[in-house]
Figure (cartoon, rainbow, N blue to C red):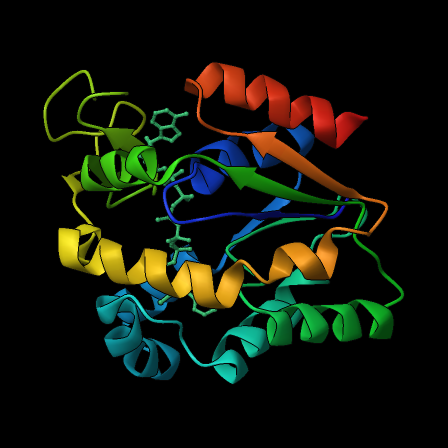
Length: 213
Ligand code: AP5
């Protein structure tokens, strides 16, 4: 099963995508996570990407597309879940071309949506584990011990781009560059939508339903 999750920043792609990929044995390919790891490791890609990420704008397509191709072919039969890619129509076209080259296809493209006020509240309260990448929320899913990950005990931090001014820029970039993907994918047979405004467990159930049917 190969699938794409797309939607605005904070809608829950990472939270739900990590769980779904784990349960289905899929590779969870989150371009944001891959880029943040590259920044932390100080790689050439990371150095080029950092300023774009800090300002809430998109990293140039050639960097991101190059990172994806080697990874979509690396998980054998089980398949992959793409989270945060494609992010604009040019990346969607590049993805189609690479899938064609490898004789692969997308089984599902799932659009997750929620009202903008909910997105802002989710992003501004988010905490992430530095060690395992698991997401918490100060109000909606607080860690048992303040500042520590429930899963691995790692340190929790707030992402630099979860500041109010950068969130506003990311939402603007989403509307202009990512929302046109709706028109690109809407008529595909595997296209589905999920209302992601509810609580996490309900959203997960809705997501599972559209992935399986
Ligand atoms: P990226 O890391 O992909 O960020 P994003 O798309 O902005 O998405 P987020 O990770 O912020 O949100 P999410 O939908 O995963 O929400 P989450 O599950 O964490 O990208 C960051 C940057 O990298 C970009 O700005 C760009 O510069 C660059 N980049 C990445 N991909 C790129 C690409 N393809 N091309 C070019 N540049 C690229 O949830 C958010 C919070 O809400 C959490 O605290 C969570 O606990 C909570 N929450 C989740 N669901 C619920 C719920 N149902 N109810 C209550 N709280 C909830």
